[in-house]
Length: 455
Image (cartoon, rainbow, N blue to C red; front, side, top):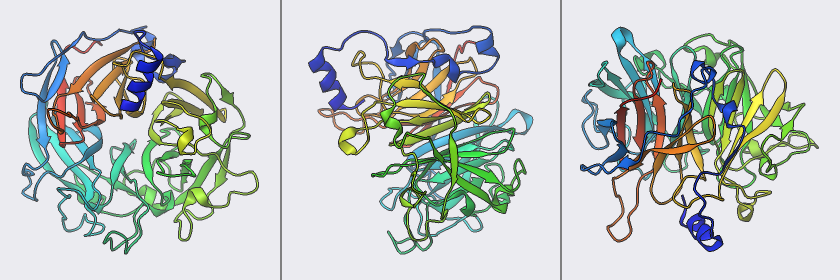
């Protein structure tokens, strides 16, 4: 959480224990665990790690799977820097495939090695790497899954077991040394990267992509845009020509549309949890490739389009898609200030609902702002990577809205006098639910966490 927020809370005397997650938290959780009424307040206090890497509750343990700068087991080069979004997929004989983003910009310290047949732009330093694990989280293989992309932030899994990696940039060829336009989504098969190659899914739009979620019933792909400046990003849906078609089907094209909430030009203006808006409209994007104008600046007609600052995490649950606005600041051009929202869109009802509002009126030592990567836990809970300043945590949230610290980074990348910790990203669970995987962004580190998970 930011120093600014700490200072504000200290001045206002906001020291009440607990977290300011208000709203219908139970709506975020689906599955048998919730149906059974499971809900817990955590696993106890975090225990300082004597090795100075990762603090966990008693009874939990971690294994370091991969660290930036080490040699990839494939011999293709070094493990790249800036570990970000990630997903876990079931492999054969109980194995797990992890596909991991590297949010590398032109200034990245360790780029993703270029590999013939799976490199998009030789001057792009981003991409994905993939790890193959056995049932005990031993690393069997580690290799490049796609290279030559840029600023690979988040993404999302497909129903057929591939990863859609998203470029969070709009840089064109000739900018920052790039030889091709960037700002696309790419499909990645972690087990066999040559099946997917390095083909931009151009019909899904060229913009500052963050994350995606797929409706497994209709095949509709929902996309968030984390634009850096005003006008802020949009929430999109992509209607593929070949829904649920398997590997490579998204190359067949489709229609890209942006969400319009009638009467709501900026989602930050909505402050009350439970506020719902029926009759959500989807407006065709005039130029998905943004040949002349970024999509968020294009002409959507006299009624305009709905924007939001810092649209990030996105996932499908039940019959709805959920997406995160990490924060909004009036001083930066938003209609109002908030410290994080979670929205739910119900396609069958064309209804958008604000289900969660984060912070800031809570204990300054607890989370309450800037939710980023979010995943559903097998036990029916939620895991949140909080993207702020100061100490960096992965927090759990029960369906009753109780918050507990699940992990805390112990790698100081600052100085003893001014400590600093890399944020967490890419939290995800193994297909059997026994392991939580997560990344520390800097220094790039991938962890496997096991222990007495409640089930």
